[in-house]
Image (tube, rainbow, N blue to C red):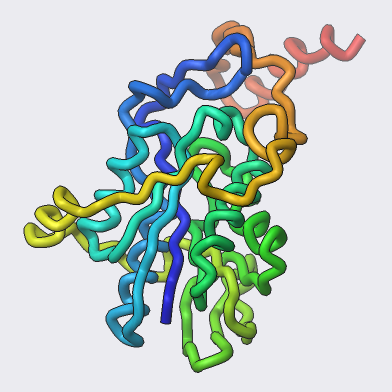
Length: 260
């Protein structure tokens, strides 16, 4: 069972900076961490390898500093890591990101399962996982809360819904996006941290992948951010005191002029 886990390094702080020319996040030099939902994807990939054998590979796309996220994944128990880093990838939206990741997976070729976190904390779109599946023409199941069974050519999973969950069977290879209910991520062991420090992380650039240059980076992104601004601060509210009937009458008097 060969498992690929796609992760993203996200800002560890809410104090992010925006590039005024491209209206994209400035990631270089910002304290970062593995996207929280991707931690569950990493853990599930490791558990599947422990139970079924095989190999785990983690992939991320980002600036050179994203290598630290890959080493953190290796410290948890991932076998191999690949960093997609090139100036040409900068400014990618979810479509361009999923396209680039799909091309990297395409290059790996030998895989049975791709696992992603359900969404990234800095974008909250939940589009990259399904986008990868679309580019690779893979069956996909999103919001997976439990992998019930994996056989040679199929997997059966529980997909979380608002009312409960669905049981879905999909042919392999397939892509799954997972939610936090699926497991509890482990802490890295001392041996794992030592191995992560010495591990070789593969670096792939545009020249290493079979990419259409029109589909990558800012220019290859259909989504364009026209303007980013901070909404003006609202004036402080007014606290009404008294009995319920008295408060209701005061509130009517305040609202009434706004209705004309």
